[in-house]
Length: 127
Image 1 (spheres, rainbow, N blue to C red):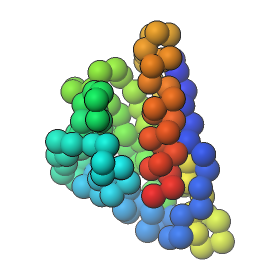
Image 2 (tube, helix red, strand yellow; image 1 turned 30 degrees about the horizontal axis):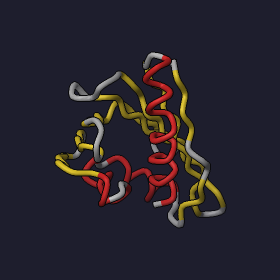
Image 3 (cartoon, rainbow, N blue to C red; image 1 turned 90 degrees about the horizontal axis):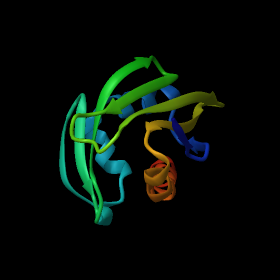
Image 4 (cartoon, rainbow, N blue to C red; image 1 turned 60 degrees about the vertical axis):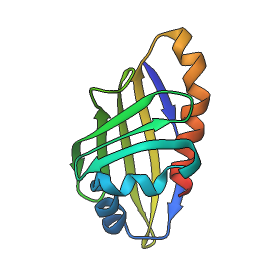
């Protein structure tokens, strides 16, 4: 199992607002680099997109703990199985957030995807 963690960031919104935003999969598009994705599809509990020169990734809303955690899982179109957990903590009315991805990938594929996925998760955290 490969674990990829984004950096921790402070979001200028309350944990409740951040949780509500991230709970609707239609909003995930606002966190992705526009110039690096295509074929975006979504509804409230599912999204799918193609990463430039790479794979199509699909995410499904799996479970949540109100205002503190959201867990997404890989959808049927993803090239490998993974879970993506977003941890939310109150930080004086703002939110400390971090993404942790646990992926079931072989060592060769890990060398290819760990760097780009870390960059993607850090980009998403900053957005």
